[in-house]
Length: 225
Ligand SMILES: [Cu+2]
Image (tube, rainbow, N blue to C red):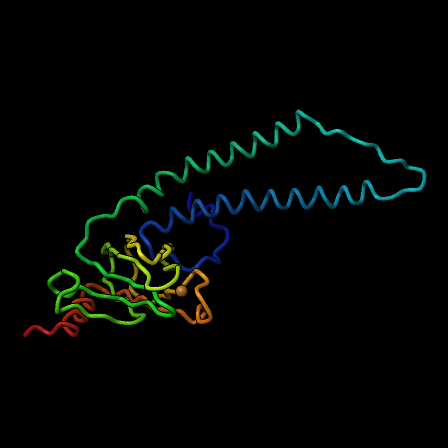
């Protein structure tokens, strides 16, 4: 059913465990609003032609049509309510529950970089073995990654298009987000909130490693002594 609805393929490649469900909702909303837009535009063009100025034709003042107005108001409300009910479980699963994981990073946004802090082998932040990198996020494939997101200055937005994750980073708050990548590769981490003159250049990279390559990377960063 997902493939059936996916007539368009212009979204960035999905490598997220929950991406297909988000895309499914996205396409439903996209097609509903697309059809509504075409209908409104077609009616507008038809009326422009039908009711254009003609010699000898007088304008008629119309008060409206109560039945029609109730119909399109109730119809629109129903669509919005159904979309809300359809979105609710997915929102709860992605935004309100973070699956347990020992892969954790702290992402601190600042004008105009992503500071990525790795807790190191002890799994605890703010200890001697922490490693910080700018704009470089390395994670293993097929593992839940927990992100503790905050900002040093203004509001930024941590955007992983391929992971279907977008979350504001707000100064003074730490917001938890998570994702699970399904395919090794390098993906962009743009900032999706206008945050100042360097906003357009605020770009990091997510590298998703295979389990083996990830182990190798960990060994390079924290050589066993
Ligand atoms: Cu930013």
